Amino acid sequence: MLSKCLNLHLLHPHHHHHAFFFPDPKKPDAIFKKPLFPTKLTEKTSISLQTHSNSVMVKRCCKPISQFDGFDPDPTLTNDDLKPTTSDQRIFSGLEMASLWVGLVVGVPSYYLAGSLVDLGMAWWQGIAIVVAANLILLFPLILTGHPGTRFGISFPVLARSSFGIRGAHIPTLLRALVGCGWYGIESWIGGEAIFLLLPKIIKETTFAKPLSWLGTSPLEFACFITFWLAQLGIVWKGMDGIKELEKYSAPILILLTSCLLIWSYINAGGFSHMLSLSSRLSTSEFWALFFPSLTANISFWATVALNIPDFTRYAKTQRSQIMGQAGLPIFMGAFTFVGVAVTSSTKVIFGDVISSPIQLLGAIGGVWTKILAILGISLAVITTNIAANVVAPANALVNLSPSKITFQKGALITALLGIAFQPWRLLQSSESFVYTWLVGYSAIMGPIGGIILSDYYLIQRADLSVKDLYTLSPTGAYYYFGGYNLAAIGALILGILPVIPGFLRKVGILSSVPDAFTVIYNNAWFVSFFSAGIIHWILSSLMSKRSNHQDMEPLLSDSTS
Image (cartoon, rainbow, N blue to C red):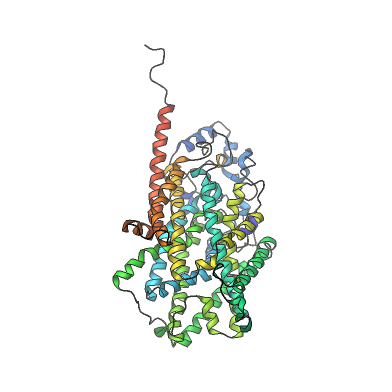
């Protein structure tokens, strides 16, 4: 159950009963509860409400949307995981939303991303500045996309129905799911590396530890990966209730272990002055050549969660809670980036070489207790991040594909299997492949989806959705469009992705060369695709709406008039 999965994160011991959808207008967040703009939908709703008694109107205002007000949703479009949240399920305060981000941020990929910037030749302050700037930019789509989740209590797959159509919503949700599966594989591979770190040296020197060209890694490392993969899957499959307490206490444990690593590097490097003495190896032109793709990569890092953030904000108590909670992202990423960059920089002083991978660093440090703490910390980081960021969205997307046949557990299993197919060991072979192939590459998919959803919600729908129409296959429903597909959104998605493809093909080696313009577009893939797809969707939707209104107009003269 999705509700069980989300309750893993800092479940509040008491349920509070609030009127989440219609708060006191005097409260600061009341403006977010009302339609931002007048629309035909709101006008129609107000007119229909006037036909009822005052008691009925009060009941509609205060009754949770999740009960559908007597409306029976289509059984093929809903189950317990896809229904809007009730008042009792609104358990996330601003502090708890912020703590959720702590659990997501404090992880090996975040550390690895920061270290990769130093490994590519940047100075420590340049790396931190890029990470903070990227997360400040991403904060806006995070909050804007989280708004409908809190207001209507709907998840990302359901929200996507409003912009892509009841059936067309499968396109963005499955694309988001594929990226989540890739990340699930990456996190699981990192957990496998922690197991490999614990193995005795004699085992690491056997023939099983030698890489196979066709596999891309050694059988021993692959076996460690599968071992962690199975153990993690067992926790996701059977231990949802048991993992709740682990999630609750994992964030402070991870912060403590991270602080220990920072203190170790401070002592062994002889203070922060030596630790951060690694200057930039890049010229001014080289730095700016890396700046924009690095900025794009850092935005892309959380662009996946920025899409499915309604999966979490639907459990927020108020709009203020979700806004205040998410405002901590740039702070947490900046702080953890400082740790990652500082420790990575110190490895140059301590070992003579820059070590950007925390797994390799812990191996270089050595010692039994170091290995024990490493496997504990890395396992906590992987499990907490994977469950929240890389299981919920793909599993939800698969549930949305066939609610009557696919449960959350089955969706999680499919996610885990696809995680192997992504061959994460190849994605993590180098900083170049991780940052500029994987992160920048999939930003070309996440960007246009985010742009279309925000453009549709704020410019087309005017932040006013009909919850009932999100759960019906009736051709008269507001989001049925053309056979259940919104052609404007699908066309905008294709047009948003197309310009990035030549640069991506060159990056992976399929094309030997492309015009410089396509390289620039690829390096700024998220920005280009986000804004182009959003604008195209708005234009196409406006044109199609005018055409529809024109066809619906009655002629001024009847056909019988001569």
